[in-house]
Image 1 (spheres, rainbow over the protein chains, first blue to last red):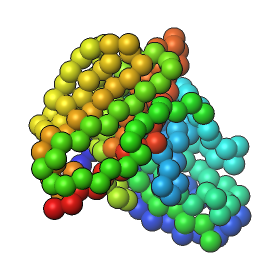
Image 2: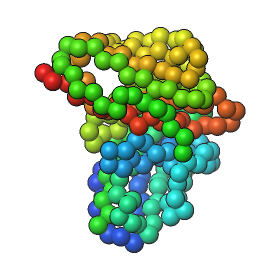
Image 3: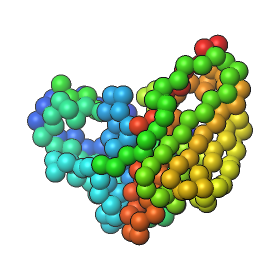
Image 4: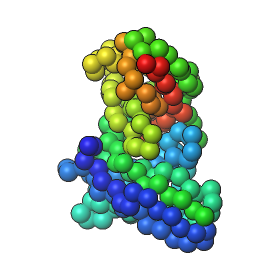
Length: 114
Length: 113
């Protein structure tokens, strides 16, 4: 158990809808990272937050947004969903804001868009 | 986006065999991380490397930070069935404020009991 929690574990929704994925980092970790992993693909970095502020952006679509709250949990919002958004979404956390710090991953949310 | 060249893409071996995989890049990295992912689960950190030439072990796993800082290797000795999974390398570029980890596409390992 990495100490990172993600909810929900599974999510099935229809095209055009909006969903929110939630992540709680390890106790004491200030950085949260979001990744997308499509079937048989590697991990695509989406966005990083550190202590409530956006720190780095990857290949995140404009339809997607994220935020980190004062209690350090983070939410990833996916809107106007398309079939191609079906994927595993992982949250990871690390102690500091450097991307090179060891990142610890949650169990993921499997999103299926029908 | 930029990715690491991770090889081999997949491996099928017999239980008890040793395994080697590597990641290479044309860029210099200051950190290398190796992760293992079981199906449907999140990646688990295996080994972290922070210095060129560093050799670190974690049980039957050994990883090295290449002296050119452009590559890293992971070896698994005496493989067992639970070694099955996808192994990812990740590195941080030595490029100022670039805070992102760059990820390889993974090596899928299958072990025949």
